[in-house]
Length: 392
Image (cartoon, rainbow, N blue to C red; front, side, top):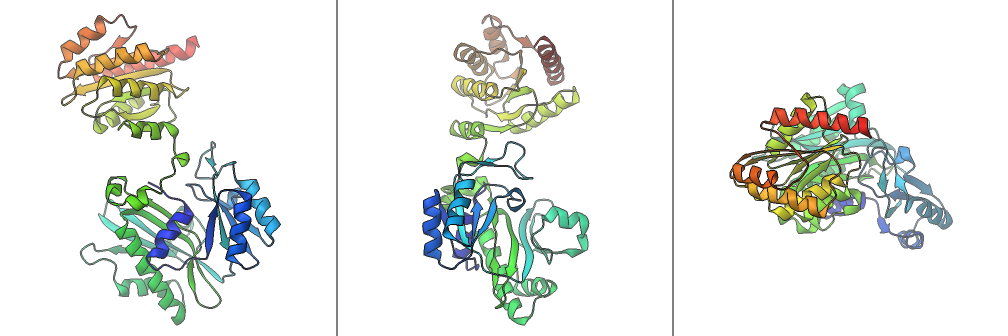
């Protein structure tokens, strides 16, 4: 789960990380009011979306008057901001963050990531702040400072000091940086974070160290114990189909292919997508209906898959254990009654009550293609998709 910049800064400030003064606004008038409340004479108006590289895309505007603040907010609110990280469809801007734009001398990079291979938290820092970490790693790998944290003891003060000195800070700045590095680690750890990026981390003329930008991601599976963070979720920033799937306890991720997939079990769903690729096709989605999928959930899965206009064929692949093939068959029939299935439908059933499931489908009168194995199903799905495209 991702949160907006202003939400990440709110969390970081709660752990003692210094951030510039700011306020969120949902309209141009609110933006002006926020600027007057913050004081000063120089502000940054930042589009709030779940993506980076906003500055390069015109999503951050510096303003010196209230009229400029109003115009900047009016220009950003309601538009779809396209950055290097959003894809061509962009992300909707429904709120902006007004922040005091204090002058600074240096830009640094500080990040924390859950390194799944090492099973450790990895701290990454660099003197090359303001750049994408991928760009730094590709062009100047020697500029990266990396520390792997031992989970039994956590990040230690001496490790934070080593990072601060390698960043080339003076004595006063080191003290502030160590505090920031330690407190940011606590925020990452105690909030079940999977990624925290402060880019840039800036050093001011009076030796303060501030998180000028912040991006945080969290472990979805831990949100039941982090209700304050779960409540920060902004559904507008994600695929609406994924939000609809979550309401029905379905796992759905939209992709760019043309063969819709309805599968039970995440592992089988991944294998199904692999077999479609192996057969020369492209999966349109990952969709796991779960172990106890009722006919209603299967019908909901069909509606989700068919909401993607790129889908030219649907492959239903069920290997029933906890699930039952007769339930899935009933769900397919229910979906056919409720939703117009105007693309080829390939069904492969195996496992619990498989004969009953096949009988239900055979007697349904539905125009579908059956398959006996995953390889056979994938091959038939690709062939049906190609035929549909030719006929269309």
